[in-house]
Amino acid sequence: MNIMDTISGPWHWSFSGVMIVIVMWLLIISGKKFGVSSSFRTICAIGGAGKVVKYFDYNWKSHNWLLLFILGAILGGWISNSIIPNPHPIELSGTTLSALADLGISTDISNSLVPLDLFSFDQLFTLKGFILFIIGGFLIGFGTRWAGGCTSGHAISGLSNLQLPSLVAVIGFFIGGLTMTHFLLPVILNL
Amino acid sequence: MKHISFIAIGILFGITMTKSEAVSWFRIQEMFRFQSFHMYGIIGVAVVLGALLHFVLKSRNSKSIYGEDLDFSPKSKTYMASIFGGTFFGLGWAMTGACPGPLYVLLGNGIWVIGVVILSAIFGAFVYGLMKSKLPH
Image (cartoon, rainbow over all chains, first blue to last red; front, side, top):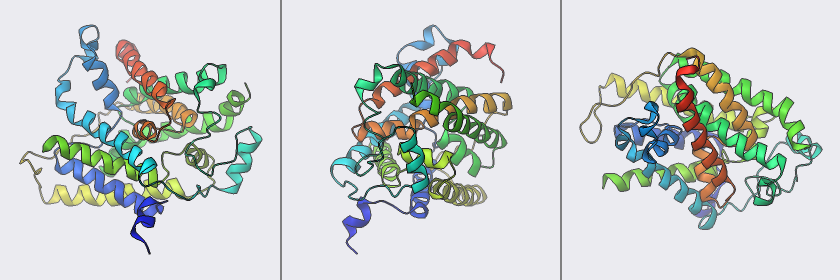
């Protein structure tokens, strides 16, 4: 087996899970916690929001490492796409593909992580795009800060540290995610 | 050196998120439709192995590589915030197919419109800060 083929992916779910734990382990032994959504608070604080809102008046310099981590995450995405691109299309469940086709989503997923006809700047200025990207993004920032964490901070770091508030948050993630997927998204995508 | 190490860990995270396809809008749709084990497998392995990691590090009373205590601070027991905030986030997660980590990774993958989603998320965090005292926690 060629090593580059193995790295370029796609990775098996079990190996992916192990790699996430290695990332979490590296952060923990560096004295940090695995959690990405606090970066939104840090960025607000750097922008001077602490002068107007108490929530952002904290020692954000202690979160500088998180911004470096995010810079790395962006670079890692770029490397994955440009230097070691995955030659194989996602092996998505056929049931999901036909459900998405019924919603008018292009089922040509040969070379993209997202439906490209939806994730474009042309769509951004339609009602559908505005709801998906502007409202969707707002809910991510507002919701994760309210809940005190996202998938990394609650679902992975929090659950593996046996935190009950994290279990409650993950239940919330699924209440929201299931409601959106099964009831709201079909309406939004038909706008 | 310390700075470079965090960038390097981030790169590893970005590659892992992309190669696992956890950043894929399609995979998140599949997950919320319970039509594949893929995402549950990733998160399941991470949680079980992560719990073992926490157990080992705590029981050995390990220090960080810089000699500090490790950060195992508990999540605040604000259950109303967990359930309501979590639900808000879940709605956004299923719309954009991305949680905060993958948002940054997708930007690196050249999905430029995600930049707008990130700006909206930062604005959302700002509005949360404004309204914090009025929300149940």
